[in-house]
Image 1: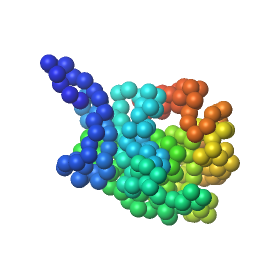
Image 2: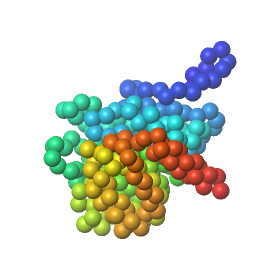
Image 3: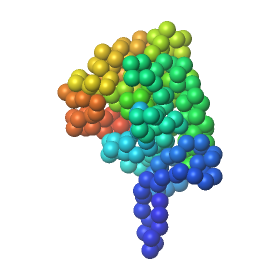
Image 4: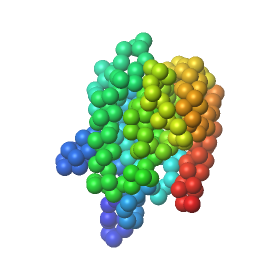
Length: 236
């Protein structure tokens, strides 16, 4: 928030260096709401070869009075941008592949109450593509920190079906939006992920759309409706 001539304005600020970056460990973009902490929060996690800016298109679907923050993945990807795991073109990242990213993400999450007044008991997640896989891995390894997430055109890490940590997704509220024409994450991968979430006992809302590796207008509308339901439930 910036104050100009006595008027306050909200806008997402990029944090690339300084004490805040050192404490949280990851570059990030953040929009802090007007009002007093602690804040309800949405953490938006980008996909492979992305950065902290690419998920802001989904901000329109989120509760407007919440803190929104988007971290940059820690690893430079040879394709471009940054990734949570730098993988080969033909491989699917496994649960163990995300261990370093989960550790970096956990440091980031741990520092949010101190730095931004985030209430970790009321922190929610949105993941896109590989960002979904990172969040699934994080929810399995740190289940006490994840209650609900919206997973957009993403996938479950390979080997999750044989991990005892899959049970940690029980009762997690998940909205999945996937594209039937997605060439990056085939619909078979999306359906596998949905089946694993159901197997684990997650509260799954699964939606397929006639689109590629993105959400179309109908998907954005349904995503916004779901987030409104989350916000309403939080007020009860």
